[in-house]
Amino acid sequence: MLLFEYKFKYQRLLTHLLFWISYVGLFAFLISFNTDLNFVVVLLRTFYYLPLDIFATYITIYILIPRFLIKRKYPAFVISFIFLAFFNVLAYQVITYYVYIPIYFPQIPLEKFSFFDFDIWTSLVSNISIVIFAAAIKLTKLWILEQQAKADLETEKAKSELMLLKSQINPHFIFNTLNNIDSLIITNPQKASESIIKLSEIMRYVTYEISADYVSIEQEINYLICYIELNRLRFGNDFIEFNTNIEVSSKMIAPMLFIPLVENAIKHGYKNCKNPGIIIDLVVNNEIYFSVKNHVSPDYNEIKNQPGIGISNLIKRLQYLYPKSYDLTFENSNNQYFVELWLH
Image (cartoon, rainbow, N blue to C red; front, side, top):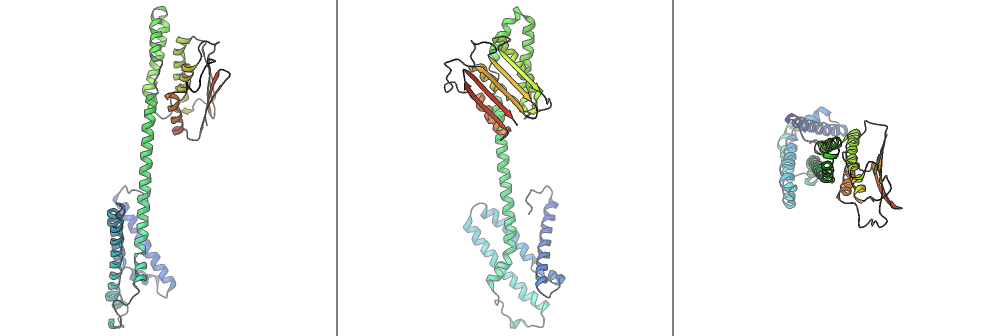
């Protein structure tokens, strides 16, 4: 009856027992409050009819509701419930006529009463009220469990989509990096070795770390530094400027949020410009601020060169991981493209 799943069998038994004790106690209190009968007397008399209430209640919530109402067999449910209600009224009258009156009013001959001398509609409403109440609890529980199941499915779906989005975020520069390393092996073996180490750190991060929902800001910065250093092999040491101001080093962040913005700047940025061609700023305090500014060619067409799947995936991840707690803006003016990301 409670609005949760039972972990142990005794919980169900105890819950139902408490429900019926509460029902009988409340019923006896209300009757004794409005009559001259003692509470204990009313309580004992109530037990004559309790089995019928229990029978009708459990038939409804464990047979009629699952077999008919839940399966949307509404006519069958209505007919069965009406039949059960009238059967319960007649059973009540049988107990009243052949048990209750002879025990508590033995001085009154039964011949003075007619078996059918009672208000059937009043008895109907009175007798099935507890059944309707219990059915309402059962339906409420089923509705809550259904909503929880839907929420769990949505969460699993979102997690699956998130993992898919993460898997789509791959280092697009890997082939260029390998080519650059290959050319350094002869001319600058030390630099080639350092670049291989940075590439291995990137691949390790992409392979293992992004399985977590959040990583430390230091891990994300280290990945970003490795990525920038490898791109400097292509564009020179001064082409990308990376500025950091880390006041809170213990901050956690979803992995690989910054890389799509940097990738986008490298892909669409104007290469034949005065250094630095790309300026990256990262500030970490109570909030996280990340910005990327890059030059664009005078004939840059923003509509034609719209951000691709990396930015689209980034927005989806932000919507899932930072709902209503992020700001992402894009601005294109004076041959410069400026992106700002705030994580509140």
